[in-house]
Amino acid sequence: MNSSYIKLNAKKHLVKCHFKCFLVSALPYVTIVLFSILNYYLYILLKNTTFDFLGLKSYYAVYIRATLLTISICLSYFLWRMSSFLTNHYFYQKSRNKNTTYFASVRSFKLRKFLCFLTAEMLKIFISIAWASLYYMPCIAVFGTLYFYFNSADFTFNIGLTLLISTFILFIIGSSFLYITLKRYSMFSAVIFDSDEKDSLKIIEKSIEIMEGKSLKQSIFNISFLGWILSCIMIVPIIYVLPYKIMAKYSCYNWITKSPAVKQSTEKPIIFYIPKKIQN
Image (cartoon, rainbow, N blue to C red; front, side):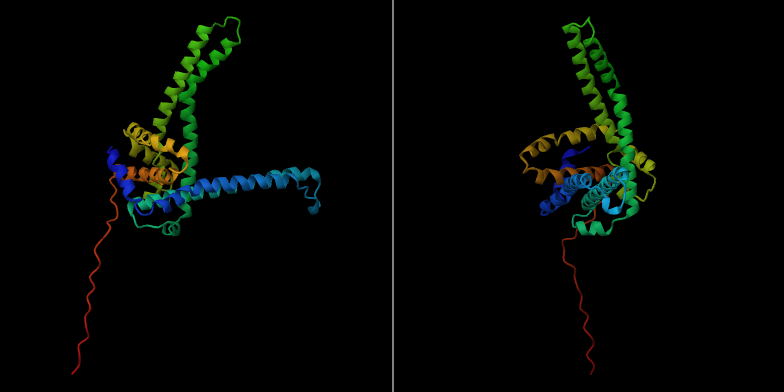
């Protein structure tokens, strides 16, 4: 994997539009914060509402509050993932065509692809939980032994320290294997944008096929952004890092799949004027 080429290509597609790309990349984060605040105030409002004006008993008010709040949270999640979908779709298209705009990306929005994106994302979450259970099982077992031994009368400092260090080492190993394994599913969104596949399972399988033998290199490629990510503590670098990181992901996909970019013409078109014949 040519990391330098991928990063340079990502930077090239952000030239002269970096701040606009930052606004688009920040949209999902702004959306989740906004909906979290709105749901909090909705909770306060529902908590103080008795629904007496509907002529209902106080017994039913509890169920009405729970129902309305659940609907609001589900709708908020749906809209949040839609904003994430539109952001990723925009960066995918921009990685192919530098001149594309966010509104052009929105106009090409297809509900079927979004639902497929949502389903594949939920499937990825369940797969991630399954892998996490497998990789963290040794760590949990050793930690359980440490907890049991700590409460026993035979506890000694040396054995306790050994179990604690073993737990930490197993946690690091499990986290590393989990991180590398999950890279197999990291290209599912690009697969959705790049194909007409409707089956979420086949989309996950396609992502695995694309990343076969490349998960470790992809992990190292992502870790190479660690310095930039840590610099975001200073807040200002986020403007540069956020769009750069997303664009690099789709540039990486284009490089792996050898997807051609739309050629940009710098020459002005030649227009021929054919004058009418002058009648005698």
